Amino acid sequence: MADPSVAIDDALPDPYTVLGLPSPADASSDPAAPPPSDADIRKAFRRLALVLHPDKQRGKAPAAAAADFDALQKAYDALTDAAARAAWDDVLR
Image (cartoon, rainbow, N blue to C red; front, side):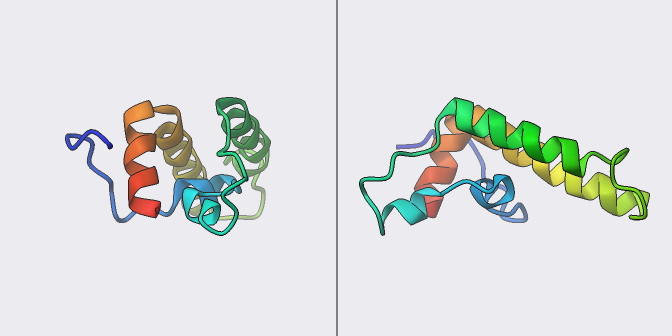
């Protein structure tokens, strides 16, 4: 069970979806599928960071580009913190 002191920000989207990874909700349809590893999370973040970094998003409003990257960073932070990841997993199941 997740640590009750870890609060989930309902305004944030599912961090697994942001990173393009299968979520625990997907595991209910395929229980044999393993959850994403820390390496999978790091790899997905790095791949998307190269695309979504504000300096790489030419032609997009700077505020919108920064918001996209901020959402990516928050999703990565949520999944690399063990307590926050457990809380998200409980919410998504």
